[in-house]
Image (tube, rainbow, N blue to C red; front, side, top):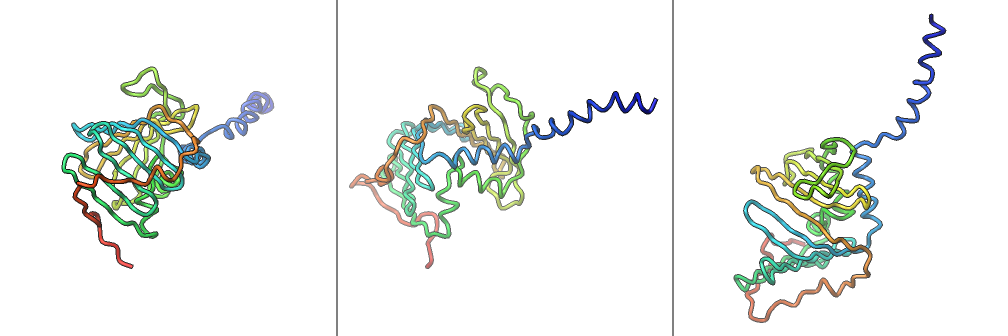
Length: 227
């Protein structure tokens, strides 16, 4: 009987090491996405931002490691630009330009887009990753013809701005299709990226913003830097 049991279970034991090598953990999957963004020098995409009942629509340009620009069509003409040293926000409704000089110590957090290798590195450091429903693709809510792999990121400490982040990732391109962030106040902020085009050769000049001459300019609106 013992010999028969050993003969029956032997094929199962032989399969276990092979299958264990194919298991993809959430942390490994997040690293694969981070590595994918590490191979992207620049990208353009259409972006839609939902925060409560507010919707913002525009086009985002990114250049590694931390250049970022969003030109909005809703609100029309609103712009957010970070050129590696200066964060600029133009609010056309108020004819106002908000500038913030960023010292090297703050650039890793201010300049890092979540949809970038640098941003994903920060997420993996500050959040614990798990699959929402497993590693298999599921339909994207609101767009059932699309399939995504969903990762849940739970913060490691209370200092993080989002209690939880859900990343919806294209299983083919390993690029982020949607980011959903749950704030400390339990409000939801959602970023949708579509029509992503990578490695276009975007120049640094795109991230230099000439504000309207008639706009009021306010410097260091976030914090005052101290050398």
